[in-house]
Amino acid sequence: MPTETPAAGATSGARPLAHPTREDIRLTQVLHALADPMRLRIVCALDAADGELNCADIELPVSKSTCTHHFRVLRENGLITQFYRGTAKMNALRRDDLEALFPGLIGGVLRAARLQERRLGER
Image (cartoon, one colour):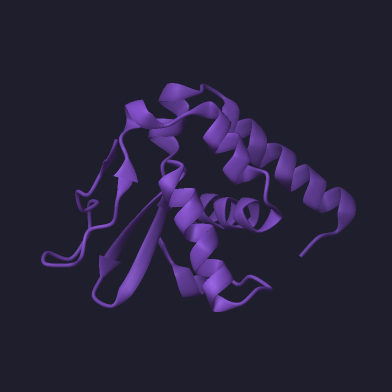
């Protein structure tokens, strides 16, 4: 069941966003979310940042509404946490939750994505 607790660093009084609890995250949903190239790109960018990024900090070759959709899918499937800091929507990878549930999965996916990027010269 999704919770609506603000993430660490969230501005008090900011509108909370629904996130699944660790126990509600499912492997099939994680894999489905990662199957889209734009969502995988977002996860890779968050991993490379090793912290929080504003939605606008991640450039995607799609419309703003499509970006919003991709971030929502990642949040609702437990890959990222989102919270407001002022008017900015911040994003962070839920690495600890993902590693606890599926040891080695996110690290393996990120390594494979980097290898594919080098092999195909993407971006």
